[in-house]
Length: 142
Image (tube, rainbow, N blue to C red; front, side):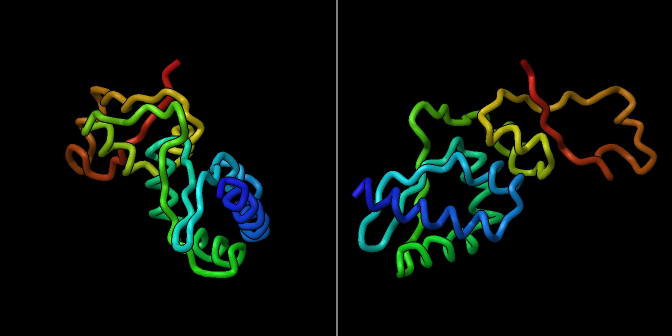
């Protein structure tokens, strides 16, 4: 089944490349691997939890379409962590990474280390009050 999963995913990747910019494809889809397929599911290995959530939240219908075209039938997509993936257990950090939708978030998909950005003293004196108009961000450390 591994070989069939890889064949379906290879075909789906071609469809995704035709629908996405090269940067978007390389950032979110190039690192995915198909690990299994059965009559109703295909299992994709995501680089980390952030990538899994991001793909589900932002590209689930595109992924479904690409897999259906490649397999010739609708298959439910399951995700599992890639071997060696360390789960994100810090609940505060877990909440923070779900909010950011910028370049820093993309770094997480590449498996780079990260930490929530510390608040700077001047940020609490925001003209509209604390936390209004401010967006949580993530940054790389190391």
